[in-house]
Length: 81
Image (cartoon, rainbow, N blue to C red; front, side, top):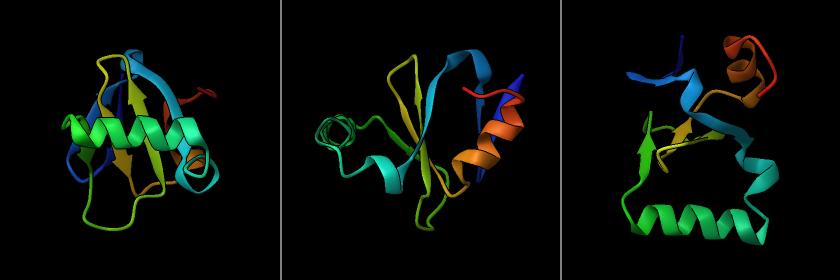
């Protein structure tokens, strides 16, 4: 199955490492470092031009930004990731 992240972005559910809320995690040192390094290396995929609410970390190392909430994404997966 695939998870729809918004825009025209789909990610295979088996490729998901985690779904994270940007408001609750972006203040952390390690999360800021992860997002900063991913941006520098071109591994950020933005699903919309709107302000993202969550991000999905994939096994391939890509970080997907989504305007959808973590709860919405988790419900779409069908289980807590």
